[in-house]
Image 1 (cartoon, rainbow, N blue to C red):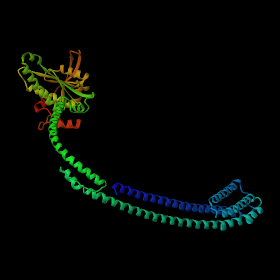
Image 2: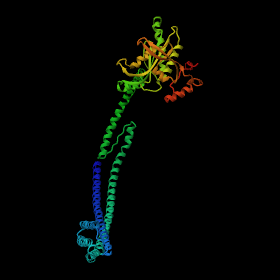
Image 3: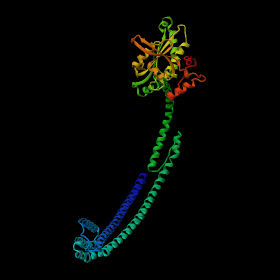
Image 4: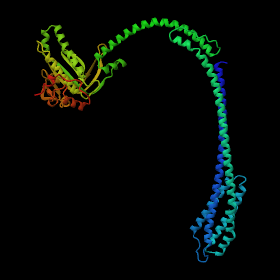
Length: 526
């Protein structure tokens, strides 16, 4: 028999036993439900019978109490008292009607007879209450001749007989429920064990059939995985035999393909190394042109989304005397000098987390706080500017170049423009204002706008100046940096000074990225 047919037959047998088990459980549940329903019905009958008995006893006690009073000295009952008794009597009558509706064929004649006697008793009570206090003789006659005999027969004969019958019915219903539960548990257990044994027998048979066949594959598969050539040679006429034949064919083809793949892998490895080298070169070039996050966005998306940046610090520099030097210096010397200066500026900006944006002639432009904002960027930009000024003064040459530095903090729009020689740049009034701050500055001094001064005044000593810019023809409020605040650089045993680090860490929740050389840091100390 084929494995497929064996499994199909096994599943059919298991499903058949499952259906039998389900049907048996359903039948047992139905029988149990009927037994429970019968027990509940008999219990309700007993409860209603007890309620009827208690109602009759309560009313009869009230009638007996009234009958024991001196008839000549008691007043007639009020309408309210009569209505109360009538309501009690009607409630008992309703319980008897309910009992009659619930009674079976055996109990129905007894309940009907009890209902007739109760109607007579209720009529006697009615007559008694109507004549009480008005016609004593008639009231006592109703009490003695009619009410008491009827009530005694109901309380001591009819209702006890009903209670005894219902108690016996309850016991029979309970015994029936126990028998049903016992039978249900036994039959369910038998069917379950039978189903389990049949399922296990088929499972073991299928398992042995499949495992024995699969184990014959193990040596050949291991050989093929190790790169060798093997054949299974299984002669069975079931699915495993067909798989073995297919495996033998695949093994032959795979062995031939592996020989071809070895040659192709060698060629592919050489190509991959070359591609990886080109990719690393292009990524390095891209990171040199664009900020890291912008370069990653451009690499993954092919474009850079323009962004509005609320808080950026822009730094401009310009060499004083550069135009005159261009007429005196050879082109090679001029370019070499600019390369030396701007390389130093690049290194300084990188240490302080600033982004170089562009150079225009002898002007150098960079910014802090982009593309990702950090709260320390105004302070970092001023420290970078101090090192830039120091780098220029240390590289004094025969042309005696000096440098103006202008810094402004404000909002800009940042993005990438161009498709051939693209560049990351910023635009906005803040850029123009930073340029005016630089051009309004003084040689080898760092000029700040009022906005930048407000952000760095707790770290640096500054002096205020008011100047008129020639292009816009209005006064500008500038601040020139004289050095660090004295209290922050008094302790020079460690660099950066402990007081500066403590304030920087408290303001910005991080460590300073760098710190100017000792002579630059102490330039503002008196």
